Image (cartoon, rainbow, N blue to C red):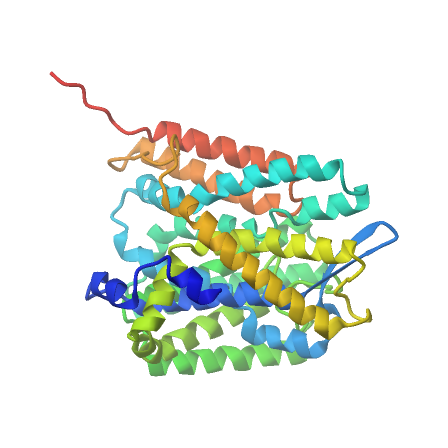
Length: 434
């Protein structure tokens, strides 16, 4: 299957020959390895069962302390923010709205087809599935869009992140953000503040961006990266031992103080650790990325990164529903758990590979009425477009609390309206012939 899939793409020699000599291959490799880790992690960890007409979507973290401990290795979402900012910070030239629109055009392009799929699928499933199976599916449908919303907001902050031009500025930015998160966590633990205050901690996702700038500008050497990563790990271990923080860095229902949504101080420390170690490993990753076959896989994967990220979830969810419907649930305590795990993993990987091959063009082909918007210079139009894209990102992030039901539908509507408005305002300038 893998060899057949790869035949549809340029050879390793062709891709290597087309790669600019100055391209930082490390960032591309980090991004695709992290993405494949997310896909594999979701596939391995997800469990489900339909019991008494109710669909229970769960994961193995709730049953094993060992798996919870492994999230300290496999919770790699900060690397996406790190790589994204590192890859784009030097391209910012002051036109905030125009710069952000260029990136959002690519990011949201496959989202429109993804939402269209779920709109049709949920209309059909509403008449096919029992209500307590349908509602969890609708809630899960756009869960992964949280990353897109947070990522857009981090990109919107690049003008601020770009001001990090020295180690003292880096330390002040990271230290101030870390202390803010600590203060918010203190309020969260006290429980005397509105729940919405906790979401101030979304600033934690700026920390990987800060380290992405530091990597891009060579502010930290690999050795310094290792030292910083080790220090962050030590602090996190101390917080876990002394504080109210819980082990899993992926959210589970039993957590009293969640580490992931919204991020906690433990997650902020994990982001520092992970990104600092990435800087420390950058020379080794760069050497590995010079291998033609490795680079070929990295390039192919990155040209369909959003396709992989978005579409692996409906594939995974569909496979679980089919197996559950056949009376073969993959759920702890059920018969043949290990055998079903292997079979489901193989089926999901095959279907995700097929979806990547078929749907990748949606990510790389300009979308009529969406692509083509430009903001040619800084000014009020640029600010308005950038602000609308921030609204779209915030609405995208908020929508995942409900999925495509209840208030989630309103959040998605706000997202779409904001995106359309930004695109209309950024219409390309057409010069008429004289």
